[in-house]
Image (tube, rainbow, N blue to C red; front, side):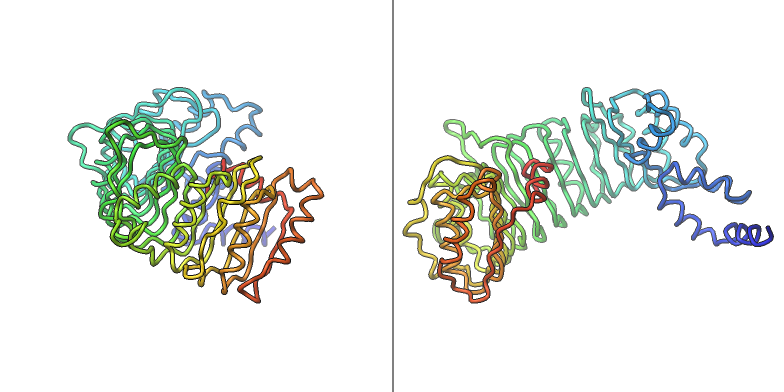
Length: 437
């Protein structure tokens, strides 16, 4: 008995900063339960600087209560806020089947009296929640994540001057508001925008931006004052429709994105991008100045039967002299086109530094085989080529025939290894992300 009491005393007498560090690492329901450890721990959870109500919270509540109703969820959040003592720097609410309600506005009003640095609010169903004006007074905000909300700042809103990361999912906002928000957030380093309002023109101006991920719809895009932007991923939900008499401004990618290292593009944007590049600098070459720093290129939903699309992808590869990794995710096709790549000269191209290639969901059509042959013959530094077949090819004897053919292709690299993977993990990961990185 004495040993047990002694152990309890040691827990109780831990320094406050260590106790705080333990509590913030626990899910909120577990942090509340620490109140039974000892008398000194009873009210420790009330001073938590981070209040997080996410999946683990809802799962535990459902396990204990059987059904997590909206009333029980609201009661739990209200209780945590009303009993809380001290500063709150992080608040996150993202639970399944949570719809817009007026209580959220009360919470945001309450939190506006704290120096919130990280705020996340995610609705999963219903109409977009109109954010109250109090959120625009989170002047210390550094991380912001919103899902299924209407972003309508007041006219006097000057942006979040300390914001480092921003993520918008299924957001609704008026034209011009997004660009103003970005340009008025000078410290922004990470920007993610998924499936929200349609942009006529999307302008990204952020001097400290390092990562930009986009999935949605725009008619045109431009990068201004993005000297350190290293990772760009763009997937268009539909092809760009150029209206008569109107076109996007030409783009000089090497000038707009001088630090670009990783580029992930969907097929719809690939075609649009190459058009912009060709119009941007016809003097320096078909696609302007080379992308000297680009090391990783990923193209998904590639239509191998589209000759022009194939040529666009090859031109982008040729314009990347230091490319080290190439990933192509293929859209299924029944058209056996071979001539798309016949006659393409890569002898003086940039494949000298290419080390790794991944081809996902090949079905064995001629253009796919020709692409593999072309890369093997012109990549002297290639170390590994990973081939993931489509589900149809995987269950077909023809897959083995194709593999035998690939092994016989001449290789510029004596170290090149071809790995034919029948693992389902790649396909599952692709489907879970809807083909998006």
